Length: 118
Image (tube, rainbow, N blue to C red; front, side, top):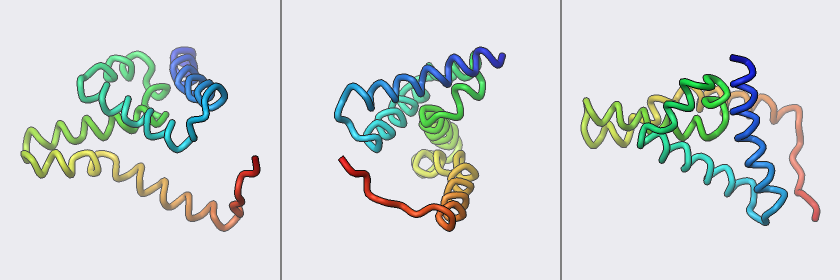
């Protein structure tokens, strides 16, 4: 299982790094592209097979977050209709979002940001 996790998660990260190195696409745009890929594949149910195969190797990268957003919206839309579709993704991912914001705030006390020089 560990080998599957490392191979799938590592492949996703490798693809992102190759895009950074070989193109002039900014990391923020790559993040959005991967998020949208996860949401689209999750919406069609394709990414669930990857999650079943690799577990955390597929759910932890940003592609897995897009998948969680899509699955949450689809699940909530079945019970709550249109408003469920709008709020379901955020409800499904709210714990991860809260932890990310909290840890980012904590880390900001120890790290100072600076502009990247060309």
